Image (cartoon, rainbow, N blue to C red; front, side, top):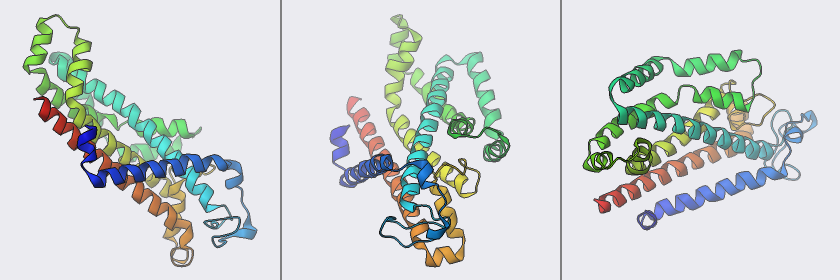
Length: 279
């Protein structure tokens, strides 16, 4: 897979850019304290970039660079946690349902279909607005509550197809444990689907967290957020005259999502090529 991935020069550039961005965010955010960054300083409203504020300040005199780095770190942590949690649930239930079949398959899929017909986005917005003790952990749980259903259905369909193959039948005949067959034999053959699904989910979750914050329904106001910086662009005055408030955040989120998606697609192609060689 590594050799196939290295053949795609743009993918290598995207991966290098992604690594640099992650280092920039996680290393740079260490030098900022949330309480100091979010402290209001009206005497420095919309200060131009330079001096003590490399990227200027917002309407409350808060440092834009600190909000950018801390907000990006929070978005990445929240999106990664949601992706891992929903992936574990969705892939696990998909494998179990597709491999088992019968009554268990029907029961799980009816439950999944019920969750999928719910207006998930609206429910998340409502729950976000009514939860009293709202923090990052609660936000991750709310974002994960409905995101696993579609994933489980996709993996269930692929698992049903794999379960009919000769290598699975041979393993069953040999008395191999069902859990071992699902994890050690079927799951590796779904690697390309796992890769593209995970990367797309990560990009979507980052966008969802940013979008909720942009609408004012994301993380608590005391936490820096990229969405809050982007929300300043709604004001025509800020959009035209104070571009340093929103432009770095929009550029960072655009490049970050673009790199994640491209790297995921390149890894999927590499995984597909590996599986073709194995066949």
